[in-house]
Image (tube, rainbow, N blue to C red; front, side):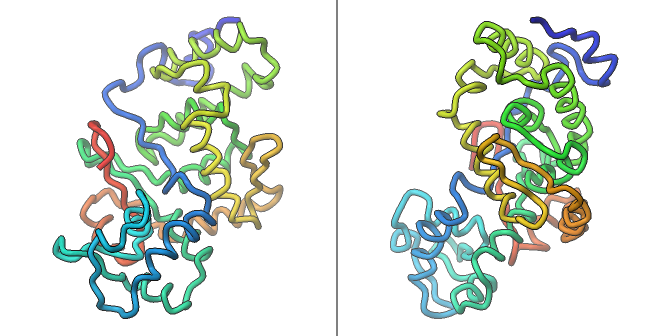
Length: 288
């Protein structure tokens, strides 16, 4: 088995071997490596439970009950830092404390607003959940292999979607049933796909279920599956699927906060929606 780079370039109009950008790290990640239930029960609720009033400021040391409870509650914009002395509830955090919004509604709104900025390239912005919905409108379903290569390699949201869809179409056309390949052919596929997408995934990264990439796909699948009126989280086949005939509901979701998702101004993205948006800023040196 060998992939024809000529066919890949000519038919799908994509980059060839080693033509992808190579000076950036992968930042296409979920809002957190937790199910919605774990977010609520293990991270958010124990943190919010410390508060009794709107203006109360509590130190991070006092709030900390696990490695991620403060950071992930902050990532959902339920708390915000105050002059480096502690954290207070945001308006939406206060609403949640007083049972004015359910956690599921909160979580679903936040993942559609969640974006990632590359701190070393302020023009590089990714809205991962919105990107997945836009891709699904074209491809109808996504697999682990789609995620491992064209999706996780996305550079920006708008500029990368077209290439990502072409990459998925290429995989579907050339390898419609990749799971039936024998081990030798699977190893060859990894080598060839690594060359196309200029990554260095191991055989285990691609074909086993004990890796970060695999787990992140599962979290994306389960998070999007919360939109159960239009998205199916198919755990048996390991797919994210559009429910037949429900494309308009996805378009309606994407219309929400469209202006925000279209902004290219870093400061506007951060400040304009600071009371109800997740912001995750990374640099090429790692997450910050």
